[in-house]
Image (cartoon, rainbow over all chains, first blue to last red; front, side, top):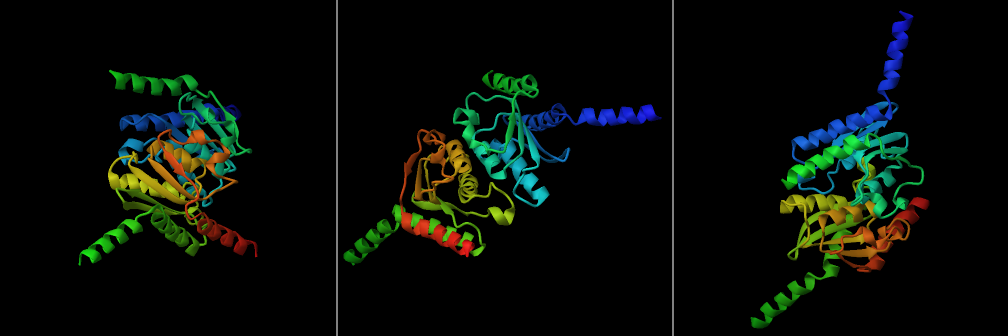
Length: 159
Length: 159
């Protein structure tokens, strides 16, 4: 019995790693794929629970602001009833663009965990100063899986 | 009679100057004031007509993405049925922040006319590279009026 409880506790702890949450963001990116959108997904986590999800939906809405992160920010703030996300972590499958990094500044988000780098449109092309000074950044979480979703998508488009 | 028609034509031409459209953006900013929001307003013009309006509504929505420009971009794209605003001009009473400038990049907007400069949070603090290379920028349109709206607002807040 004691063994079973310990096993369940360990399972719970194991589930809630950065990789666990990034896999959830990948699931969001796959939803974008279903709509033939560039596959980028995001989740926002607060207190070890996912409070918001979003996936890129720019083409269907004809709206450049409909990036995965932007939708997740709006949804997370709605959930919390406040605009600041200073106790939250954003998991996103692709490095945020300038717009999304600029939005993250206003949210004062605590942490951003990024899958694949974006050497063309990532915020780092402009400068790291875009982010809020209190935001911690981690790159490379499930980078290969996140990147493959994108490279497969664009390979298909070029066919 | 000819004189009257010419007079009316000239009046019509005069009405549709940058100042005319900035005054419309100021009207939007005043709507934000009515909700005790930081008074920033925007309009987007295409073919000499206003196709979208927006005003800052961040506090009421608890949503950092609800800047005047962001709402105007979404609304303009919805009106046109396409995400690109490359034939449009944005008139905004305050220099866009990084998020809004980043969004303008994705819209490929033709021109941005700005009222007051924002030395603290304006996009130029990060760098002019944020904007799309085809976007033309003009500063200082009704700068005093636009700036006074903001300084009066913050003066009141400090009382």
